[in-house]
Each structure stands twice: as structure tokens, then as C-alpha cells.
Length: 219
Figure 1 (tube, rainbow, N blue to C red):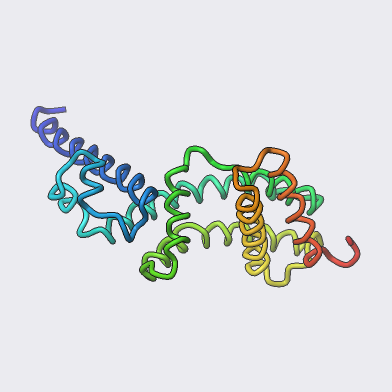
Figure 2 (figure 1 turned 180 degrees about the horizontal axis):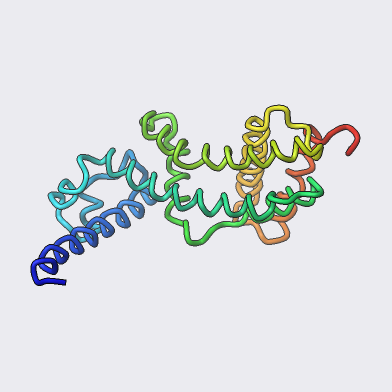
């Protein structure tokens, strides 16, 4: 590498580090106070940079949020798609496979704590949250996961393991039933659920789901 190349690379590395500092700080602030209450000043303080530096990288708070949630969702999607493929790629028994999937799914992914803090804030602010940002998050995250799940449910339908004429609706139904039940049980308990309780949620949800989706001969 020539001296000229090194001179070009140094500022590029510096810009990359600054960009990373900003997005990490933004994840923390958006997860802590939500999109509506967050400000560029708060994020700059968290990142240890000036507001001018942030505006050199992002046009405004909306642009920064979209960049943060899209990148964060991409990594979470990859993790969830891997879970789906692991449990549903070669199914011989629908109940066993879906229970194992649900047991894995209800457990937190500690490496994505900041992301799920943002998701909780999005849900809490839903009535006042910018629609364009909500759609961007849905398309970058939940809908991609549901499409992967739907593809696996379509394969199970084709093999006679599920009765899912509309696999996209079935995938949506499964995800909503699992997430809503988990949230309700945790809210009622007033604490994080234990391992046995998480397994119980997974098993109850799969039984309820299969009541509507098992072929008659399998019931």
C-alpha cells in the first residue's frame, strides 16, 4: 500500500468508526426513550460526537432511525430465519417441529437486546408513530420472517402435515398467537417467565394453532 493509499484509508476508517458510534448510540437512545422523545442532541451526547457530525452522516432523525432499525432488523431476521430453517427444514411430525420452533422463539436473543427495546417502543408509540417508519420496520423485519415461515408451512401443507391453504395467513397467525400469548403471560406474571413457563407457552400455543391447521386425519 502506498503512502497515498494510506492517507485515503485513514479518514475512511475514521468515518466508519464515527458512523458506528452514532448508530450504536442511536439504538441505545431509541430503545430507552423511543423515537418520539429522542433527539439528535441526546444521540450526539450518547455517541460522544457533535450534532454536526451526526448531520454529516444522516439528514435527520427520521433518516437515522430508519438506518438503525433496518440494519438491526436485518441481523435479527437472519437469526430468526436460521431458527426456522433449523426446526422446519425436514419435518416429519408437525406438532413436534412447531413446539421445538416455538420453544426456541420465545426465548430472548441476548445479542439483540437493543433491537427489541426499540420494537417495544415502536409498539408503545404505535398510535403516534410515523407510518412510513413503521412500514419500513415491518418490511425489513417481521414480514421477511413471516415469508420464510410461510414457505416452510407451505411445504408442510404440500406434504399433508398441515392444512394451510393460505400459508402466509397461517404464518401470521402462528406468530401473532405466540407473541401475544407470551406478552400476556409475562404481563400477568409481572416478571420475566422462567424456563418451564416459556416451554408451557410454546406448547399451549402450538396446540391451539394446530386445532385449526392440522388435517382432519391427524387430529
